Image (tube, rainbow, N blue to C red; front, top):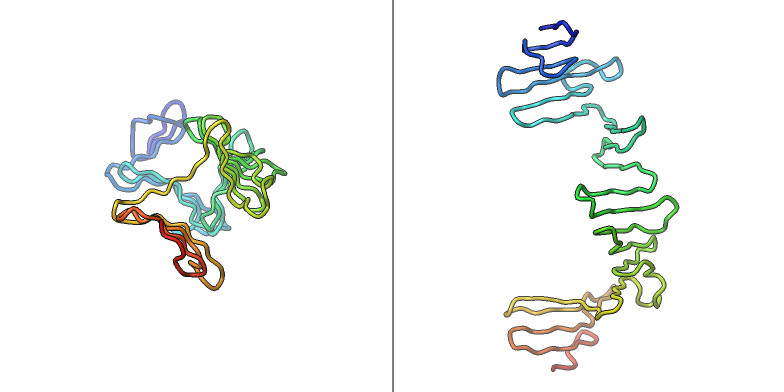
Length: 204
């Protein structure tokens, strides 16, 4: 162990690159700082470990509890003992590094929104209804508002693509039959059929 004139401590090294504590492992194996207390116990399976292993690095919470991350003296994120990630912000925003993508749920809001390039693109309402291109999917006819796709000033469409020797399907199901009705386009012979009550009724 080395203590230099600045009071910085080096363990396993005489050249302290960063103080006040520099821990160095002379091989490619683990270099670890292990933190325990009277509640956690003091074995290798207790407490918290900061480590490097080769070029890898990690933080290991060894207790059946959460791992917390914070900035500005405020909790920002925690990983629960079950592995769930909780992001704690005022508006519940999860921003991506590019700055162009965001997932947001605002306190008191009834929706989870997804945005790209600073513009909302999709919304899941608290009812479970999904809107693409609309901020209010529940404003449409209640018999068909589970998924609403809207495009202002242009055509709106859904494309089903398949290989040349396959088919594209839309099925209608109920608790007794997972294909009681349907529309199929057969790409091999290029025809479309319509099924009602489990049987083919029209072929085009």
